Image 1 (cartoon, helix red, strand yellow):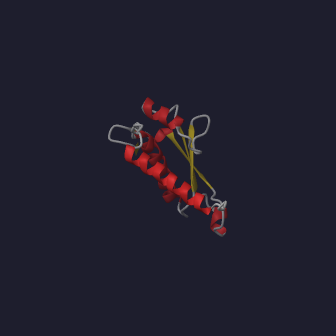
Image 2 (cartoon, rainbow, N blue to C red):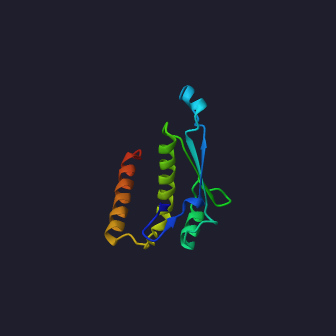
Image 3 (spheres, one colour):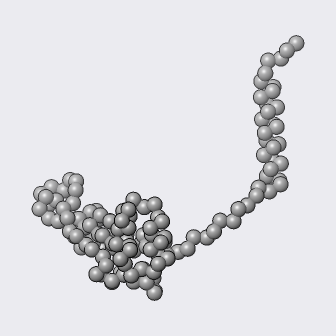
Length: 137
């Protein structure tokens, strides 16, 4: 059971873990042992609250497919157990990221002083450029 918050948990039956062979260098071990882990989590079929599901599907994350399935591949460690833990931790972090509601941005205006300083800087820069021109006698 994967705990997201005090109220939200994901049962193990909803998370599909598959052991596969890792890519890259690693000698004979990498060719014989399936240490990498593929984690698949179907957002639509899960028991997550609807707000979590909507926010996850809105995320522009490359790990979420068009079908609404989160696919995480963990292959950093030589141990399958550690890779499994890492995949579950990454899934937990992804879901926790959408659990926190984002604050709505309050549009602000530049202060009068900052506007005046900006214009003053522009005029000073313009005067400097005028001094660089050729003088017409």
